[in-house]
Length: 311
Length: 272
Image (cartoon, rainbow over all chains, first blue to last red; front, side, top):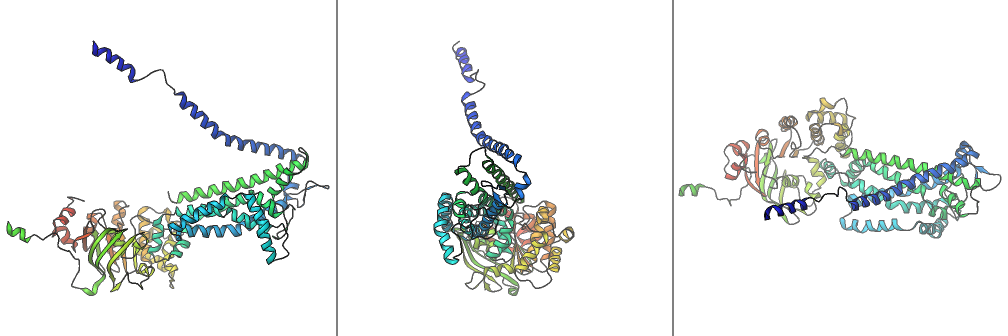
């Protein structure tokens, strides 16, 4: 009797019924989903607004005039909406940046992954991270107050605002990104490949240049593209250092205007919203967005190819 | 009973693998070599001679120091942090760890094939030609690549696709490519660190046949876990256990009439 009743009680406590779902778990899942959807929704909202507003602009200005026109004067009569001077300014900055940041960044990465002792590495890496953490407006003033005067001492014709000093600071700015991404891909090259290189009588330099770098070439390319897409989108430093003069030129020592700097100029100015001059920033933004999107997709493709090699 | 005890060799006896006869035909003389990693002794004083144009096998349980010793023969241990080599390794009488010895030069003469095939992510042709080219090979590179691939018994399988990536080859083909890569340097000695452990039996047989061919021109030292491989392929066998050389001699004797009980236990599969 005693034993059977206690058996029944035990049975009840073995498995509590009526709780097929734990609400706390469901709640947490919902909150997490909400957080995750914020960034996705924001992206879609931005794309939608860009398309809608740029659509209004292109109702008044033909796409071909916008893409192939060589005079950008959207705010003054007679107006002209050829975006090429802004694209040209942006390209000038990106090329200048690439010339400086890509070789130096790759060299830094090679040094860190192949040559540096772990002590030097542990000093170098945090310093690079500090460099990456400096606000971009500080870089802009650094260009204006330090690099431009330096350039003028060498070459007095240099204008106060110029593409060269902006390129240099943007280069310094993306240097940590290039170095860190390249460092990651170089370190992902298996040691067995390096040893294979040494085993046929290669020196360290020959192994690095002949085996390690080619093995991670697509990863290096991907980090280059990612870093340059950041250079294209960079705003504050180029607004401060490169000026606000749309200029169809390849001369790095004169004032230019990039796409991003133009958007800042209009956003801060007194152009009334809804007016065609104001609509231009959406058209320029859409173009900028398409360019960086293409570059990011391209860089992801490269990275995926790199992963396939070792798996 | 007592007589038996007296006859049994004391286990503390230092075994040396020195060969008195044919001194001229010794390529590598390992003299009392001790190798440690950050103070931990992996090889505890080994003396061994490697004869020319023969296959010498090193066998022993995992962690016995056989790979460590092999890697010290062409200074690949230089890349291991904290690795320290004591004693002498004489290559044709020159101490490989001497002050004026360039390790890069050593590796040109003493090539190596690794446990896992590690072809470069380059074309088949470039895999073989890269070593000679960076070392300033003056002759006909194409002929050298063809000869090396033929020696490695891979030529017929790849001659129509020399430009395709080495990554498209099977594991066994990749390992033969790595052998061809080592041969293209026209080395004197080839070290093989368990060259078949990642391969299937057919590819293994391929590579063993290849070793027989290669010993006509090269001196081979192989480390292997595979007892059959050692008994089939090698002329001499060294048995290592926990960093010591237990026994060294002609392979036939090691496998049929081992002097040491531990060797017998190991080769008959009673442990290890």
